Image (cartoon, rainbow, N blue to C red; front, top):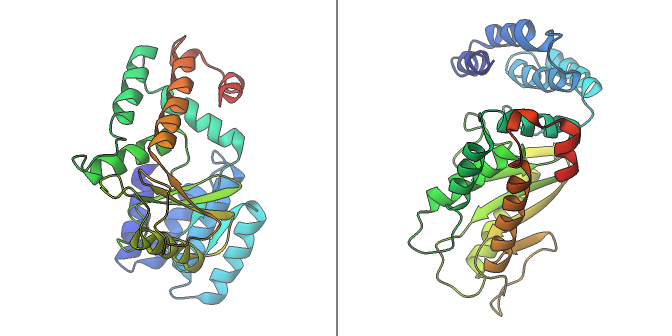
Length: 264
């Protein structure tokens, strides 16, 4: 499926719009093995590709997409489509993620190796910290960033649930003991990016991974902006570890969706 998605995007980038939409229709939109919600998401992607050469047809497709999936985030520009997930779908995807591992030990070692990347230190490469957040987001099925659909101007991390969106800035290498005006401006930029990229969607929260949540005297942030300070980072990692340890009492394939849901 991933290869077919890549082919759709490749055709789009090469201005082969009709071919891209045909691939979407045959492989995804009309595929009964794909959930109705996901069919709606692919239909929306087709609408934005079609918009390049036929706005009327694109509008019709967008209406049909919304009818299939009422939880779609509606993008303001092409190829910024994002789909929110129901709790049931999220749990299924978490189960699929842990089922990659034959035993609980391998699963536990993998997640622990990811959490090791999440350290506040000027010596910790920012790319390593960011990759750790991306991997945790994938494990929890919250990561919605697609490198083919997000430009380099956009936030590094974009998480979303059915009810909330999170744009995340990583400041793990900072040496400041307080949150600076520059940091606050970057969070504002993230919120503006979200509001400019999506016509509608869940409430957005701007999150900075920064060792301090104490502001300099000349700094002000919006009510929906938060900093994950060093204590909260350790609490976050501890929560993940508690979840992982609970899942490690038996082999990954032995867990049911209901059991996973009770632990999340």
